[in-house]
Length: 169
Image (cartoon, rainbow, N blue to C red; front, side, top):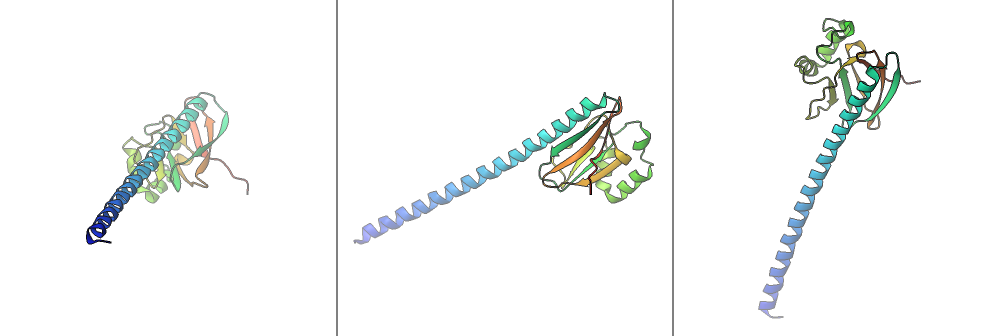
C-alpha cells in the first residue's frame, strides 16, 4: 500500500469514530429525556387518580374504598390534611402533628405554606395538593412497596379521610 492510501484509511477511521461517538451521545440524551418525561407522566397520572378518587368518595358519607396507586420513583409517601381544613384531626397542635413536624420539618413547612399536602420522598419537583382530604392522625407516612401503595379512603360528606390500607399479618 502506498502512503497516500494509508493516510486516507486513517482519515476514514477517524471520521467513522467521530460519527459513532456523536450517535452514542445523541442516543443517550434521547433516552434520558424519554425516561424523564415518562416519570413526569407517571406523576401526573398518580395525582389525577388520587384527586379523582378522593373527590368521588368525599360526597358518599361512610363509604370505604381501597385505592391502589402506582408511585413514580419514590421510596415513601407522606399525606397530610388539606391546608386550612377546619377539622379537629387536622389541628397543628395535635400531638401527631407535632411529632410529624419534628420528624419531617421540611414537609411540615411546605404544608404550612399551603401549596402541598402529598409528598413523595425523595421529593418530587411538582407540588401535589389534593383538596378536601383529612389524613388519619393529621399526617402519616408509609413506605412504597413494589412501586405502589394501598390507601384507605372513607367518605365524610364534605371530605375524604385518607389512611394506609390495613395489612393482614
